[in-house]
Length: 90
Image (tube, rainbow, N blue to C red; front, top):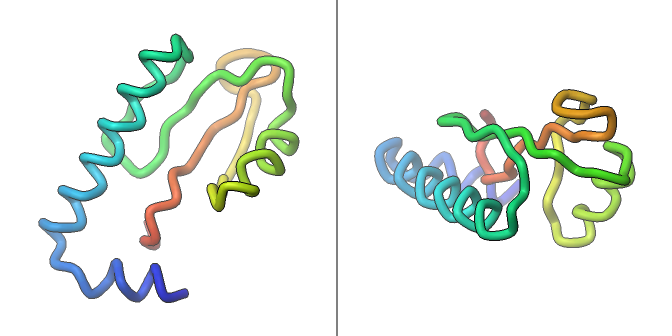
């Protein structure tokens, strides 16, 4: 709750800059690790996760306070669609 309130207190330009930097950092990391993903200019992206169901991935990343809004078979049979948690509403 506090994260959402904090995000709303920031000017839009500052929030967009923070989100852009976080997105670029994430995509660079995934590229270094040779993870297949579909980049986006929004607050979510898709990546391929082999050998795990969407729910298994949800459970694994929740330990690190990363919350996934939706998962679906999209890039391969066992892929997951990830929504970055940035403290905002959308």
